[in-house]
Amino acid sequence: MTVSKAQRQTKVKTSPAGKSPVPQLSASQDSIRERAFHIYQSRGSKPGNDIQDWFHAEHQLLAR
Image (cartoon, rainbow, N blue to C red; front, side, top):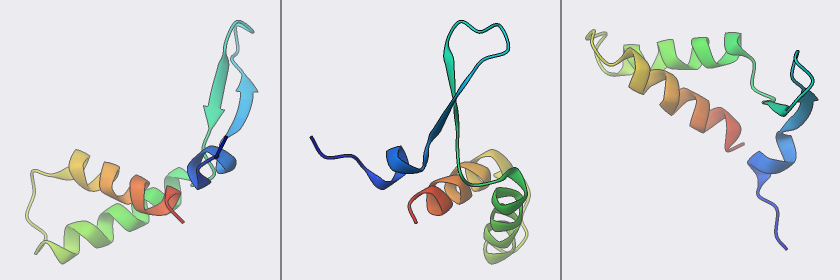
């Protein structure tokens, strides 16, 4: 079975209720926020795509 890089970077932590595992991603919110801002700037700083920018940044950082 092949494991993707994103799966290798995922750490599993027990949820506060202790019932199910909660994946902890290796990319911090600060690094995602910074990358999303750069994406926003590269689009000409036009508002309205903040969620798309966030997901794009998250995908880029986790693909490393």
